[in-house]
Amino acid sequence: MTNRSAGGRRAIIIDTDPGQDDALAILLALASDELEVLGITAVAGNVPLELTEKNTRKICELAGKPDAKVFAGASRPMVRELVTAEYVHGKTGLDGPDLPEPVMALQEKGAVDFIIETLRDRATDEVTLCTLGPLTNVALALIEAPDIAPKIREIVMMGGGFFEGGNVTPAAEFNIYVDPHAAATVFGSGVPIVMMPLDVTHKALTTAKRIDAMRAHNTPVTLAAAELIDFFERFDEDKYGTDGGPLHDPCVIAWLLKPDLFCGRDCNVEIETGSELTMGMTVIDWWGVTDRHHNAHVLRDIDADGFFALLTERIARL
Ligand code: RIB
Ligand code: CA
Figure 1 (spheres, helix red, strand yellow):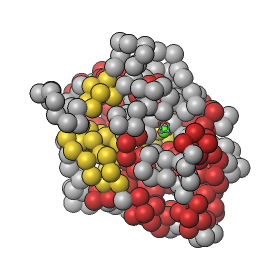
Figure 2 (cartoon, rainbow, N blue to C red):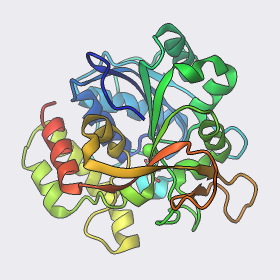
Figure 3 (cartoon, rainbow, N blue to C red):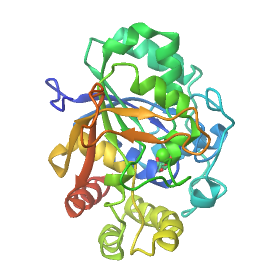
């Protein structure tokens, strides 16, 4: 697990299934000069692929970055049928503000080919993969081109849960549940992983005070971001009875920018792919009761005020 930017900007690929929280993560990345976004790859998840890729382009244009490179990836999980989450994100996947249809083009190349070719072209340890949705694209790339595994600096991923349980079944978090086989491939790949499970993202709540502070910047991006959150948070506020909902995906980008906002420990993480009852469960050996290999740095705590201050300050720059 490394966080040092090698020299200049840290080169990243964002893999995503927008999704309002994905949108905030993409805005944060595009607003941060420390990061070089080599490309953004869309995957089916919160909504089908034709919407996640279009939503990705909408977000890039909202950020004023129409030159960003957006690629379409897997339209379904490796083995299981696609499960989507319109009940959270709305029928477009990006309900809330009325964002215009994108003008920027989708790249011709497929996402998996882009991931493979980029890693082969770059030096070892140079590219970080930031995954915000099901891990299908990354798993397919690792299966098709095992030689890329040692080229990946690390995978910083939102997914899973342990002390918090699941959010789509009692045992499983959505990103892992949608494609547990892909998650098992990634967690078994030997690539260094930084894991942002529900245990930490559930502490990053979009409270009224935090979102009012974002809205107060009164820029097109901060106003749109607040509208995205206003729509997105309602499901979890009703479910958990909280002021605000968990803002999952921007935690991935915030870790790259300010890792000291988070704390956790190296653990073994295994993925359930057999039992229907616990399908997609991330079995995190937090207490070290086994001698299984530590394959992930698992975050469990966050300075939530610091996180929202970073997020708001950055997107207000766009
Ligand atoms: O469980 C939360 C995750 O699932 C987030 O990435 C959200 O965008 C959905 O993809
Ligand atoms: Ca997501």
